[in-house]
Amino acid sequence: MWLEAGNPDNVSAHTAQLTLPATFEEIEQAKQMLGIDKVSEIKITKAECLKLYLERDLPLQEEALNLEILNELAEKIELMDQQDDAYLKYISILEVEQPKDFETAFRLSDEIDNYEFVECNPPEYGKQALKRIGIDEEVISVLDNFTNFYELGCYYMQEDGLRITEFGPICRISEPFTLKKDGPAMY
Image (cartoon, rainbow, N blue to C red; front, side):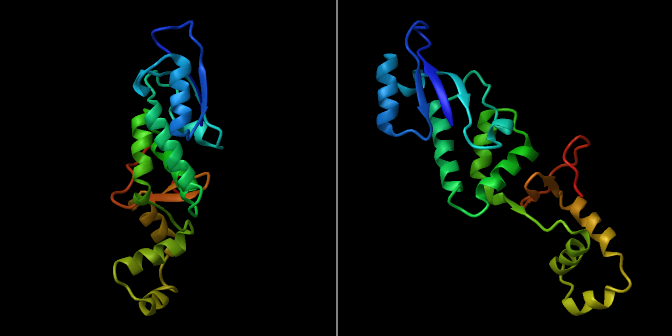
């Protein structure tokens, strides 16, 4: 992330530009340049995301953005880049949840393990759903000739609250997404 910050008490003062995550020293230098003693006194006048897709779903237009929280999220995103699919999962979560404020977007970064990418092939999803409720492979293979696994899979996709995102189907583990008429298609 990139941001421009100023001193709210002195609008004619200089602005400071930071690329996040910023080090302690970089933040101290910005405070000094702005003539501010505390990080909480910094007013963010402009914030942009340098990473693809974040700009679209991260609510950076808020007036009261907090530099410390922005920096912490930038650190988390940097760590997500080092884990398989973690960044893609986070931006998929943002796409589906559509957080209205930055605090919610930040909280969602802590809850990333509460979501998972899933198979989006309805017949396979139906078979996996049967396995989850204790039906063994042998019974499923017998049912294969007599069951519409496509319809069964579609039913469980809806039941599980599966959402299709630009990066793949995702569901919430703890509780399904609520049905939205204007939300992303389930299948």
